Length: 81
Image 1 (tube, rainbow, N blue to C red):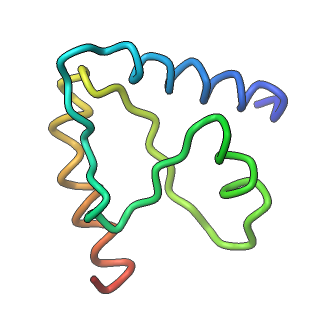
Image 2 (cartoon, rainbow, N blue to C red):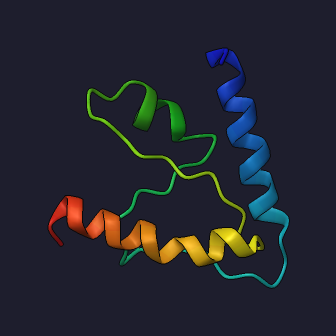
């Protein structure tokens, strides 16, 4: 994948989240996850020496809603929290 397209892809997916009225975020500040957007993606992920697991999601997506607890459990097991 052309890395020049990543910011566009992230922006488009993030935009889907921002326009979904009536849906709460799938994750809270208490979860051991880092939520990124178009402004934080590059400096957080691309320039990081660490390995990351990234989920692109939409709050209104049923599959994303059902998979959110799996990501939370995985993050807890990796971070030890």
